[in-house]
Amino acid sequence: MRPSAALAAVAGVLASGVSAENYLGFNSGSTLADRSAKFKADFLAEFNTAQKLQGAPGKFNAVRLYTNIQAYSKDDPIQAFEAAIETKTKILLGIWTSGTDSISNELSALKKAITKYGKDFTDLVIGMSVGSEDLYRNSETGVKNEAGIGAEPDVLVKFINDYKKSVAGTALASVPVGHVDTWDAFVNGTNKKVIDALDWVGVDEYPYYESGKGNHIKNAGYLFDRAFDAVVAAVGGKPIWVTETGWPSSGPKWDQAEASVENAKYYWQEIGCRKLFNKVPTFWYNLRDSNPDNKMLFQITKDLSTKPLFDLTCPTTFDTPTTTAKSGSPSATGFSTASAPGSSTTGSGSGSGSGSSASTDGTGSSESGTPESGASLGMSFSTFTISGLAVVAGVFALF
Ligand SMILES: *[C@@H]1O[C@H](CO)[C@@H](O)[C@H](O)[C@H]1NC(C)=O
Image (cartoon, rainbow, N blue to C red):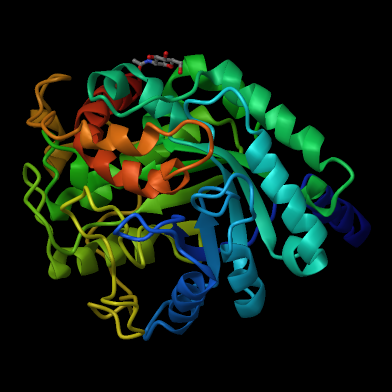
């Protein structure tokens, strides 16, 4: 390719707003574990620790937010913005879209931030996710698990257009727009119109919760890759960002999955180091926990210490083979023993997730809810994953 053609190609990518940078970051809700609001100092503490984590395989200088709105306000910009500006933290913005017919408060908070902080703010914005796990909540398994109120594909597409209209002519107009959901939501053909409306696709994956699938830690790499490959096959070449993934360092056992520091470290290595870090834009779950309803703790450090719970350095060899997509035989992964949808051991306690989704108007705690509802989703993940894996198994059977 001639240099000018190459430049044109690069310019094309840039013009479409899709960055090739493989961001490293964590998720950050708008409230603390006691459901009180996070303020600037709380976000500052997170962002500073994230960037200084000992042994990290890169600089964790990005953050995924779930809302533009400061917790418990109507439409004040979330104070994470100021903390991000001070620490030069890149921002994946989020708009909360479940259980509402308007995102006007979200858009109002964002516009206030653009006016107030200008380029200091907008230069840091790497993406916008309109919604978080809304399709999952409205899916058959989400409903069955009382995961809370979600949003239909048409509603999400409308919100995506509302957002685009509202930032047209601002510095955010060129920022790539995505939607975050559980992986099986993207494999569900009914949701294709959402994918079609996006510049990139944000996937949440938790092999820990895949009960009935041989979800012990040694299978986590296989389970992750299966789901990831299914999304790759479903999104027609759109960039995929991994917006939530992690393994709990403490908490109750989940089918064959055990929460321990040792396993969290193994997951970090086999999924993070092998598959994601510096290869795929990645927002790990998580630097700190904030869901009082979830008994599993995903934090990789205690009290925001820069000394993590385990060694974050990446090994050079891995247990999980790199090729899984074409493998028709699940071999040693335990897939072959998969039980039928609905037969998992879950269900109890999933109702705890609905609390965080109950607030539908942009006030209260719903904005912070996603990491939280995502975590309480834990209860639900296991069942939805089973149906999801059933889909994947069907795909593989065609090869
Ligand atoms: C597929 O997506 C649609 C729309 O989001 C949803 O109503 C439906 O329940 C989903 N299917 C399954 C099997 O979850």
